[in-house]
Image (tube, rainbow, N blue to C red; front, side, top):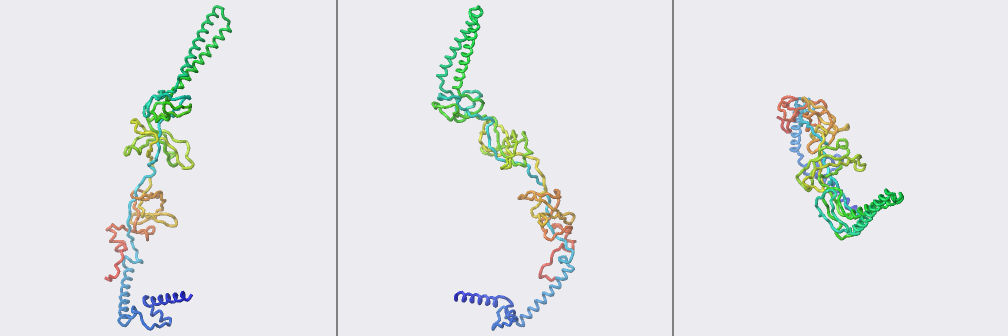
Length: 416
């Protein structure tokens, strides 16, 4: 407790000493309160006769200068009481277009793609094509073991031939009245059943062949010869890459502007510096509620075969867009009513309210009663009022009028 009290006294003493020695006029202030110091600070020791005389001379000079300054205020151009013409700097209003281009990232897919599966259970006997080969629709790409099916087909064919012969003989006997109608019907039934058995055996043999339903390029095989496969085992994929379908998402505001057939430009990441022209092939019928975007598909040609399904593309589309006045960012001012700017017309300024649409690095797009080529004030806006007369900084004709010098203030300390 004692240490804290002692430390407080030391701090108060140091502050009092600093006040006495460092603050001008501290000796006089203390004297007015009845506190007489046994010494005078050096800063105030010079206030002898010579110092007082110097102060009086300085005060007199200040009054003289003040008188001249007052004269300048009454009749000079820089005084606040005169009609002063403000000096401003302006910039032209430009025209800018927004929402005229859309760029999106999409993913490519084949025009047609089929996953080829085994049509039946069995052992894969051989593959007749290699990955990357181009095949036609219906081409055979593999074979399953088919010995049992071939034997079954041969037996069904023999039964069919025998039933056909029996039907022919029975019909001949019936014409000679040596066979009844019941016998003819039985022979006909046996023939029909034999024909169905023969067709069923032929179909079973056909299922031992793996073929492609579309034309395209063969992908990597998922099985090898000798593997046992089932009726749903994936063998390979066939991709028709004659053209590529690029799927991408666009913002909701473009939904009404995109229609099938619109031109697009696509650039593949794998082919830097190249662009490919295409067209919109399909537009989804609903907006995604989570992302507020619309799915669009574009078709781009691929005659050279350099594009592959799964590639990423940068898709660009052009639109008419919207045009707005573009002003210098320094021209925008703010008040309790919102944003505004000063428009320069015939030596005067008018206040124009604006609505900011978009901020860019080179200008601010606004919605206001402005036309391309109008001049707006960018510097000297602090003391402007509606209808005030102004002159441009780089206008030499303004120096002769506007209250003599356009509001330039005389230099300080120069009585002449």
